[in-house]
Length: 128
Image (tube, rainbow, N blue to C red; front, side, top):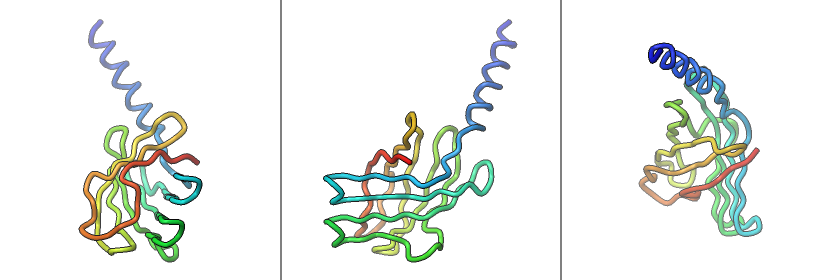
């Protein structure tokens, strides 16, 4: 009986994780549009994403945005999270973040800051 339960639980978890799709355009706004952040994620395969980001802070005075369509981030699916490596377009240094689903949103959290000045939120809830 326990083996059947464990097998069913395993199949459920595989099915749930297999359905996670972080693809799309995600947006965050704070302080009446004073600070904005968006990311675009494209699924490359079942466990890898690439994308772009744009952070605009201080009412547009500080921008951390990729110029063109060249990817500024890559992400690997680990369990129910994406582990993201991004390059700040302000200081041109790499940092790391984690992205998790939360209902109809994603939660972005920087776990390793770039070694330099950057304009991305340390934590943000983004929506499509």
